[in-house]
Amino acid sequence: MLKSFVKLAQEGADHDDRTLAHLLSNPTNDGGQWQMLVNLIEKYGLIPLSQWPSPVLAENSSRLNTVLNNQLRTNCSILLRMVKEGKTAKELDDAVCTMMSSIFEVISTCLGSPPQVVDFEYYDKDKNYHKVGPITPLQFYQTMFKPLFDLEKQVVLTHDPRSTSPYYKTYTVAYLNNMGSCKPVTYLNLPIEQLKKYTKDSIEADKAVWFGCDVGKEFSSEDATLVTDQFNYKLVLGIDIRGADKATRLLYKDSEMTHAMVFTGINVEENGEVSKYRVENSWGENGGSKGKGYLMMNDAWFDEYVYLVVIDQSLLSEDIIECLKQEPVVLPAWDPMGALAIN
Image 1 (tube, rainbow, N blue to C red):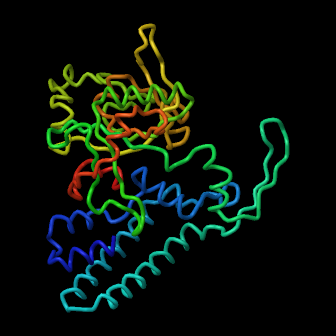
Image 2: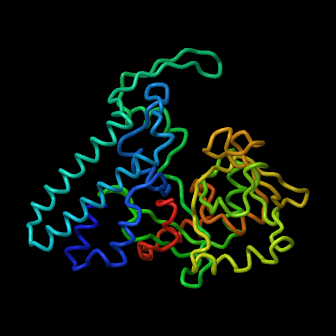
Image 3: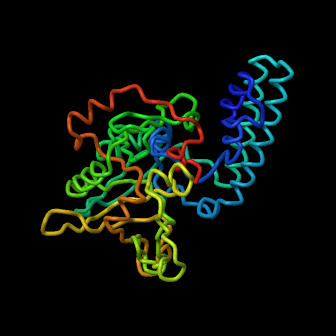
């Protein structure tokens, strides 16, 4: 983020520039795009939870985010001043490195530093004992996880019905990456029927589906349901809460991706159509008083509020694979299709 800020400042942008203002609106958050997760794991690996238990601040990070955002915004003000003063590229790079060292120290103090070595013992399903290690977190990922689920072979499909985003084209969002040298966040835009087809195919192939949606819309936390028309606003208030179509809601900022969850099951009717989806959430057992960590979504809710699914490329048709080879169209930093990274 700091290097992007320097680049924009060197191009003449000031603090009131729309792109800079967007970057400053929420410099860091708990949200993130699928490719951001892939980038981190492919570079640094994974660590068993038993070896690095989740600290309290990892599960209640709002105060940490406040501190980090404060520091990042302050750093950006310093960098903008340095650019205006004509500081050299080396001076700017050195300043960014110093700032990032300070940010890392804050995070390490609050969350702890990741172990550099993994020693893992476990019993398999046949009760055979195994010991792994000592190995690095990256080796642990490459030997224990990647053979079962290759992150680099997952494809992001979206449903963006705006007329400015034609289907069967690939897209990316400017300044959305979480690392300097990594694969960019890209996705293929498809009709909603395609997202639903590949979600069904994945579940039937015993592959869970990571997805992004606007979770707050027509959501009952008490019943743990994502169901259209479960609240009768028309009867009580005389309004249609879903008066605009999906594309219009995106354009006028009434809807965007706010949360990511995982599809783990489907209910298929006799005609072969999916009527309901089983959703695993990350809010714990209290995320829905009746769901114990799970939600039920109806098919119409998928149509209206699901924007993104991640599918194993082995399930995609050849024509879809061919579409993925296109050079992505670059959307502006504030485009709603990048919203999952800031929510």
